[in-house]
Structures are given as structure tokens and as C-alpha cells.
Length: 397
Image (cartoon, rainbow, N blue to C red; front, side):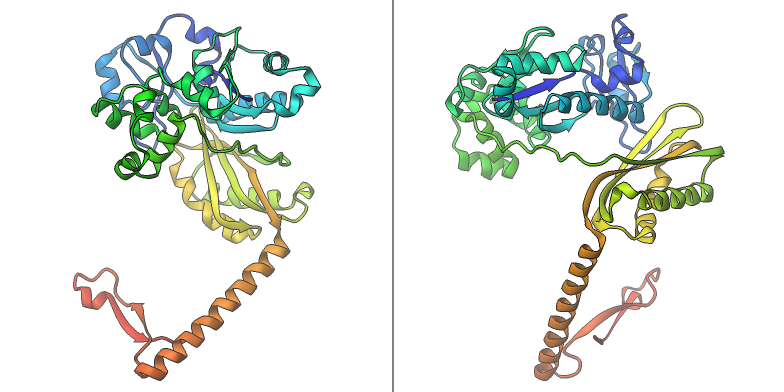
């Protein structure tokens, strides 16, 4: 059985200062992230009652609810609180798949013998969380999510049965708006509703080829979910927590932030816990001088251990800071193989590509002459005349 743990309005609760801030009846919503499209984050129950929804444009939301209070997002505190939840769940032996802050899945099969059954596993997870949560269980991730959305704060909801047919029967009367809770299928809710498809059973009754032809990969996945199937659970790997924080003597911006970033990169790469491994993804965060925090994930095109290339990849992200910063933080999110092994593989692949390229150029010139292989050389990219921007020259390997 797959268990879904859902902490409703987790990001809004953390940013607002706790559950008490949402209990006074005021309509609250997470303010749009600076530098991004002006769309709201999570909203409170009072805001939902006024017609405000997550992802709604700020102007439309204020038109529907003039009394709406915007809460500045606090991604650093959200990440810290979510890490505490993850550590508590991993403490009972759960191998988690993390969908987003406030939503996680794990397979209860490996914990049944340890705790005595599925209900005991759920009870142990609820005790470990030590906070109100909606918990659902089912044969697939999607059916467990559907159950968690219908669960109560102190009582879990379970899908009867343990096969795809049971999941399909459970999902059949539910609305297609359930697809909005999966990132891959969220955009299908509106077009499906316009076409008169309101329930999951109506979606399952359609031909898979027709749905895939109309909506592509997302439509094929939605049709598969409606039939009670889902993709396998992908549990995250437990990684060493590598993090460096640099307190800035005064509110910093511009070149000072770039120098601080260079110091953080050097410190992170010098940590002995890294054990020579490369970095696949990092998190760059800051505590703002005017209050609030900022957080941005940086995924490298390839696993890196070169400080210069890492600084070049992250330097442009500093331009997204909404204001001066009092502290800068850099944390490793995903680690790769050892740097020496990765560099050897890259050098070998690069040498093989260059060898094939030289042979291809030689064969082309043997057939078409010296001007058979050309390359585009940038001359004047700002010119209004297209012919002056680039020119063709013989390719030299």
C-alpha cells in the first residue's frame, strides 16, 4: 500500500507564523514571488470561500476579495520546517518520495512487519509528524492522494482493495479536478471540463488513443491514472547535508554578493563530507535586509566540482534577488559521482566525438572539396543587415 501524507497549506502556515494565523478567519494568500509571474501561492480557507484560488493572478484575486491579506513567502523557513518533517518520517524507516513541501509518499510494505500492519504504520507516521495531517492509502500514488484529500485530520482514508481495479472504482465518482494535484496533468482540468468530462469515470470511458492524440503525453498519463494505474514510486536517496552560510557585514548587493558567492562555493567544495563527489544541484538562498527570505534551486547541466564553472552557473541567479541581503546560503541538494571518475568519462567522450567529427569533415571534403564543410563565424551580431552578422568560413578541426 502506498501512503500519502498531506499537510494542508503547509507553505502558507509556515510563512504566516503558525496555524493560529489561519484560524482568525482573515482571507490570507501567499504573495507572488518577486521576479516571477504575479500569481498567488497557497490560500487560506477564508480566501477560498471568497473565490480566490492558488495560481490566480493577483489582480483577479484582489477584484474578487478586496480584503485579501498577502503574506510574504518565506522559502528558507519552509525548507527548514519541511526538512524537520522529512527527518521524523525517515526516523520510522519510511523511504519518501517528496512531491513538494507538505506532500510526500512512501510504501508501507517494508514497514508492515516492523509495526504490525498498515494501520499501525499510519498511526506511527502520524505520531512521528506531531502535527495535524491528512493521510490516505491506496494501491497507487494517485489513489492514495485522492484518499488523503478526503481524509480527516485524525482519521486516515484508505482505498478498499489492493489492485488497479479497486483504485479505478474508488476514483470513478471523483471529479477530474483531482488531476490538478499532479504537475504533469494540472493543465488538463480546464479543457476536459469544457469538453463535458467531469468525473474520472467519464475520462476512463474514452479511448486512450483519442485522449493521447488530443492531449499528448499528459493525456495518456491522465487516462492511465483514471484506470487505476500509476508510475512507480521514486524514493529519494538520503544524502549528506552540505550547507554553508555567510553572514554579510552590511546589506550587500552587486559585486559584494558575487564575491560572497565565490567564498561559499570554495567552502562547500572543501567540506570533507563531500568525499570528492560532484554536485548535480544546489540551493542558493538569502536572508533579505528588509525582512523575508529568498530561495532558488540551481540544477547544473552536468555534475560539477569546478568552482569557476559553478560560479558562472549561479552568478546570473543573484540578479533575481528582490533586494539587499544580510546573509547568503549555499547548500548541496543532489550529489553526483566522484569528480575524477566524472572528468575521465567526459574527457573520453569528448575525445571520441572530436575523432568522429574530424573523420566526417575529411570525408565531406574528399567528396565536395575544401568548401564542403563550413562553420558560421559571428562578425557583427548587432548589425541590421543579416548578411553582416555572420559569415561562412572553412571548418578547421
